[in-house]
Image 1 (spheres, each protein chain N blue to C red):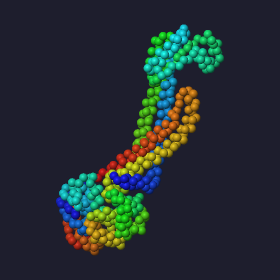
Image 2: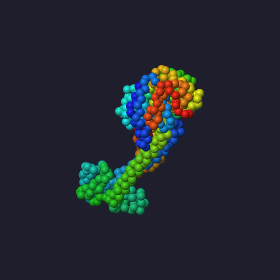
Image 3: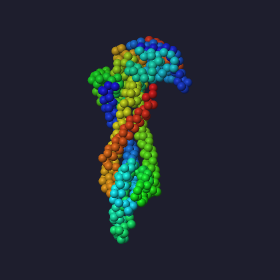
Image 4: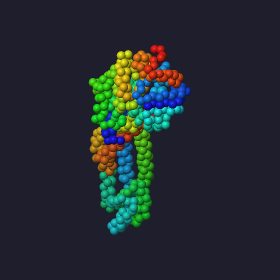
Length: 295
Length: 228
């Protein structure tokens, strides 16, 4: 195709949108509403997923050290723990620090255990690279020397992982269903605008336009409708997400959780919505014309 | 120019609209196609620009063999065969200028040439001053003149007219006929289906009478031959 013809198709698609005024507006609004729904759900789901991952990462193995262990033995133990493949990092928490935590959470009643009366053990807090390896690490750590006990809240953790997985799967199903719904709604709206123009297509064929020539402006028009339909939801989402992020994220961060940072996330979801809008718009338009183009 | 040999057309509903049509139309001829409603006039006309495909026989228009031709080739045939309809078939959302230019854009002519030629044909049909208007702002006669302008803008060798005066009053009909006559005098073959006996009887040309899917009369300078 000549560049001149492509330029013609481009101009034609804009002209057609302008002259189809209300029809274009209706189609754009339909896309807007659909993509807004998709955008909101995607944002919720992806953030839920992020929080779930954070929760998983927060799961750690407590390795309690025997009271009789010497400083050297403790260091050796730390080294062994750090050298495990699954281990991300190891942190020492002394019995005094733990007692302080207890006093902090449960009140000064516990301060009677200060000093040598402290019944708690020193412990290493071990974080796994992959949260699912937690159990494995715990098992290996149990057999190490100078370890008196290992805990990671077996039942709770197993349950948590199971729940999070279910949440993720449900989220995935909802997302896919929504995407399908969006495809259906957008291509249907565009289909209606094209149905109203079947005579136009017939006339184009009568004056000798090839199917390709007829198709291009419609394809572009569908893509623009999808694009314009995506812009408003992107703006709304950005406008709502930024304040929510700045309000809640600082609170969450203290608990070592965080929402998806707006900088890549809003661009990503914006890109996804633009792509969905434009691709489905163009495809919807091509597919709905198909039967008018048959000879 | 146009050649039909033993052409049959049977529709899926069982109606036979062409029942062994044979005719030869030379370059530069002006031919009326007359006959009662449902006799097969429309089918005859539509087969020339491949809107209908014959079931059997031979149809040739210029270099195109319409029987063996593939669907993909149809647009290229239509660029050589201008068509004018009773209901004008203008694109409602395009201006007069754009409607005519569209037929040239389709063949990827350059914009400067399009502009020159569109104004030229608008001049020929006498509507240069309405170039920016939309079809709905024009009278029936004016719309028909635009549709003729569009049909000839690519200088087709054949112009098909399906009841071009069917929706017009007598005065306007004559204006249209004069334009078609002028186009014919410039060498374009014209095949026109019509019910207008006055036109056929006054502006004498070859007459093909179609009945029951057959040509029953082929007369140079003949009369309309039916009542009304």
